[in-house]
Amino acid sequence: RDALRAYDKVNRMLREDNGSAVLEEEATGAQIIAFPGGNKTEEQFAGVHQRGALDGEIIKVGGPRAWVPIMLQSEEQELAGLWARRPLAKQLAPRLFEPVRLFGMGTWARDEDGKWSLERFVIDNFVPLLDETLTEAVARINAVAGDWGGTQVTELEAVRNGEQGNGGL
Image (cartoon, rainbow, N blue to C red):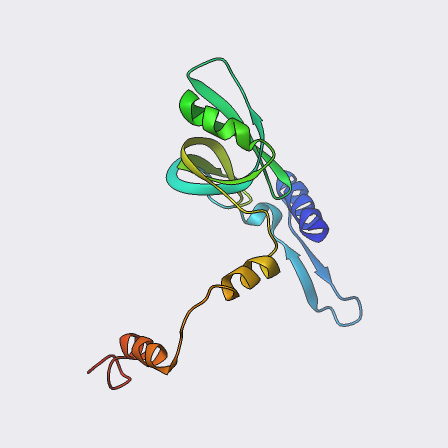
């Protein structure tokens, strides 16, 4: 991540100066990294609406109005601009500092670096998430009892590949 941040910073500074650069190996002159700077910018978009889901830990629920602001800690960033109606916010409040998946309609923007950022997210539903590692989740799935004998596997292969193995034709 540090390397990507450094690359983005150099590229941004070059774009501000309307320049570009190339890091080359001194001995051979081979190009290692190109910094397009001002030569290449991504098309900017704003106000792109799309349904989606956000995963993270609720770190704030509060506000006196009909629409209540919610803050979410997602990976290493805090997401603001999330809103829920009061009844839903009341359901989210007991989940403070717990992992959840929020569903709703988001408004996104893309900057000249091609990075998307969330402008607004209206929450219409959520599900609590288990706070477990991948290993724990796989162990829980493996613990589910089931009789997966040869017949079921053969039936699944027939559905997937067809009776003759080529889509049933």
